[in-house]
Length: 74
Image 1 (cartoon, rainbow, N blue to C red):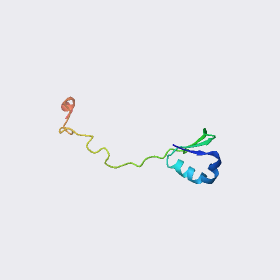
Image 2: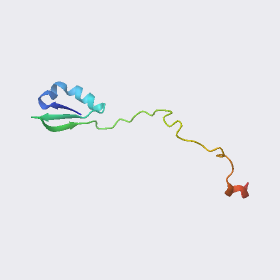
Image 3: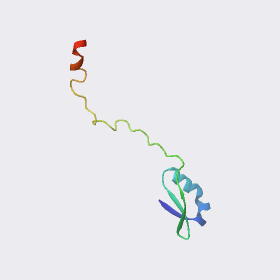
Image 4: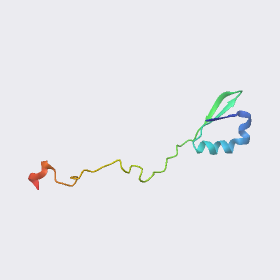
């Protein structure tokens, strides 16, 4: 979170908005007192990372074997 004095906001508004869109919170102050917090209106969704769960799931050897309870129906 960065802070900027109210008097400097007009000069740096475009930069502040771009940083807020990227997820950084910007606090606008006056006389070192926080007045406004600039945050993005919508949260950006993180991109899915394929393969991120690799190795976390294991299937048993008998996964596709008939279940004991259904042997009468087979």
